[in-house]
Image (cartoon, rainbow, N blue to C red; front, top):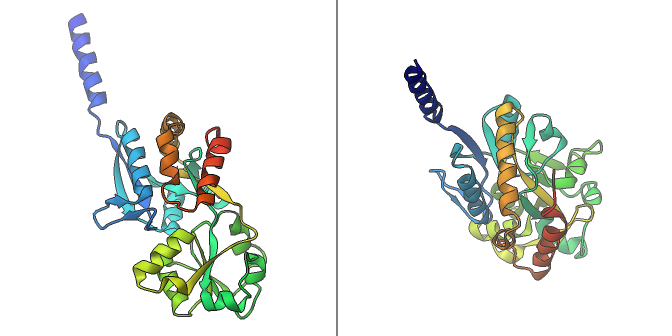
Length: 283
């Protein structure tokens, strides 16, 4: 009888360990030079390195698949409770309705207003602009991407005083920048390094656009790993948090966070935020 029980326990243990790993469907958006995904799901850029690092940390528990997915679709998948996650997610009130989020995973510096140089000169070459004032100007048309968060600017973009001359459209930043260059819109909101990289990739002259700091935006914001707010999603985030805590105090991780920045002031800000807030963030 004891032998039968032992055989049963060994067989049951083997059954448990033989269960196939679940797959995390990673929603990945193209935002070069930080992060790009090709047709086969291969990642590149600084974000690709960071994403691969995360997947290596979770490979004992999960398999991973990359899907090119815009923010509007990601939010829809969260609402459906899909086994979907994404990195570099801003935690917003809307997303918190259906999502669960890790502790900070990345330090994002501020978006800026991207406009044609002619528009910049017509505005008097401002050192910074107020988004509230810009969207109230009837002669300027702006555009932002549907479903995307722009940190604390979201309350202005979709707030009670939302202006009809700020279009919220379901297209990528590359198409938005093309619209800007051919004067279909007058400004957009983007990271300066993304705008300059995309401008060059599209073949437009680099000097034709200008990045202008936005008065209302914070200097930085944390992005996180986000999954659907389900028991499965909560389990994934628990493992993600454990992994982040294991690696975030390594000097190589700070260097990874600084990798996409070249301006010394930006590098100094990332390092300052990293030591003063990122390392001790608990939610």
